[in-house]
Length: 146
Image (cartoon, rainbow, N blue to C red; front, side, top):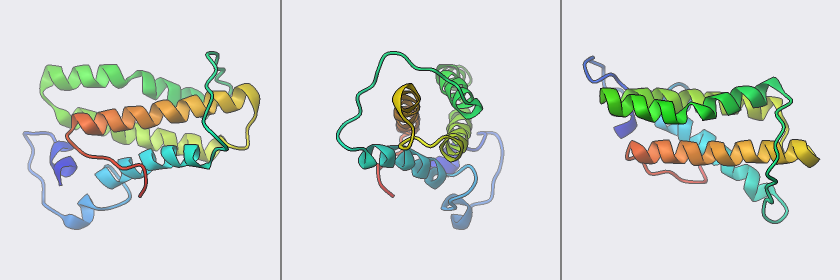
């Protein structure tokens, strides 16, 4: 309910709807949480723990789109603080979750090897952290499993 409230511009009216708030599609808390838990699921499927290398190489369009969206997190937080509009952060998190979903569909993470696997694991790790941090900033508790 908190996410539904914060995802709306504070000066607009909206109609209360449980169905819309709890939907697994669109700009809802369950959508962002589900995508965050999807990122965590990749690491549960790994044999052992992830060993990240310092060097990454973005070769696929979906990787570049996700990296670009991740780089916009600081700007999104800045805009929220400057305008007192938490809906901007909610919109960013939704867009990030949607971009991650496109990346996940286009770029197999666990079947990749070498530098490609490292890059994709780093993107998954950072996406999970940014989604969790963003939802935390909105005061929404998260879970690694849904």
